[in-house]
Length: 297
Image (cartoon, rainbow, N blue to C red; front, top):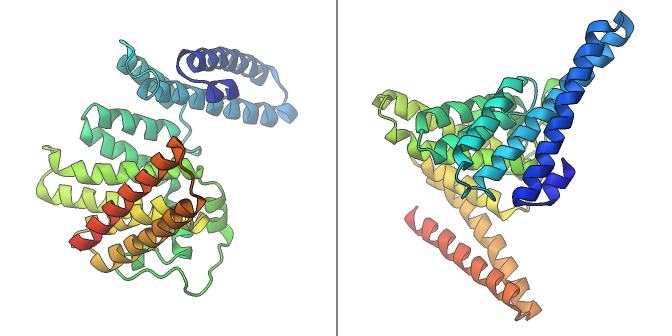
């Protein structure tokens, strides 16, 4: 599994497939032991079986991700991706991170099957809702306050009990960042779903946007130095109906300030290699994008 993460293309695929074969054998062995074990050992074997199935589910998701990225030009990419995700969903544990649901939502978006994508990503969010809302509340982004100006410099808050446990069990930073992006993308595509009436479209759009704000709030609470999170929060508040211009401006202005600081540091380094120049150009493009969004508020 680690080798698959460290390599790419067919090398990664071969590594993941080897891991899948080994994990399947482990599950067969654990199933056999579980049936024959006594009561004292049964609990430990059952836990091992659950964890191994979670690993196998994750391995199938990794294969699917390969077919969505490195191997997307393979003739069978779409069918192989779908097959891997169907197998992952068969192993999906409601108590585990929603890797399979989120990966399938990503695939459905690429297939223009927007209604399915919306349902899948919202189901994925439901698994992490409690933890995200608890973390988002730390930075003033609780559900009750999203229509007001959000100030992260308010009175310090502390998580306790179930909220702390839910926050500690959240998926990793990158996974949640991807979830927030998928939620915003789904919100922008709700109008294309013909089976939804106007009321349903508005409801689903607001649900996706609110969910993205909660996820992004959890990320901001974890690390407030990631420029992309501030920018995405600005985009989220711009998408609300009615548009929350005050909050959008707050997050866009913070992201712009951070971008300008990064640009200044990079210019002081006076590094003229191709990579540094490309990075500086990318920063300039992002600055321009944020400025344009501020002008539209």
